[in-house]
Image 1: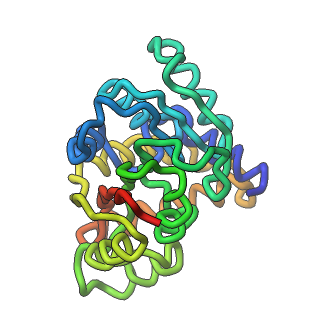
Image 2: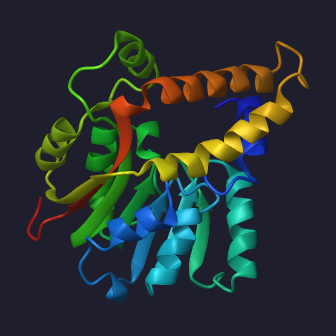
Image 3: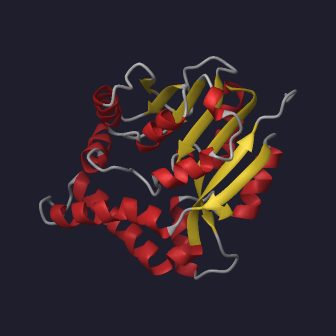
Length: 253
């Protein structure tokens, strides 16, 4: 990723509570599908951003949480928040690519990733991250998914261009099984979880438009954000983020 693009993304999102649709309530609801999480020793949060879900997990579990992101500006915010919350001894940040995680096999009781697995691809993420899970460990991800079988061509074309792995929830569940996991649960986000993300974004876009030259990285980035918001406002009833909760079986190979 070019440095200019990295700095543009960090500058735009670093002061937002979230870098994608979600909520603490949804995080906790997903966690409640997981057995015995109070006794987990190590949790990995992949694509953590500035860590809204990281702190929700820290407050509900007793685990050491390793928060990984590719963007150092997000990790700096997370570190500062961890220190101010007195959680710096339980939250460890690591700048790393989710395609090349720097951990030993079978290190984690649970791997968590909200709205980020698309960077590597759903199936690829399930397969690559499996080795970092202990047997009986859980993988919990939220993933963009179609929630209707039929939809207008415009929204299909938009998401096939921007995320070709978008698919029906039923097909995502098949991928989970084919990747060697036991499906445990699934649910879609409420509209309020999208509002948590888009309301601050819309305000930031409104305050930023017109302040950049037309050929600047930020102007190009804002154009893409505006298009995404337009698509959601027009077609959001056809897709959503779904939480997928799955388990690595004992004796898996």
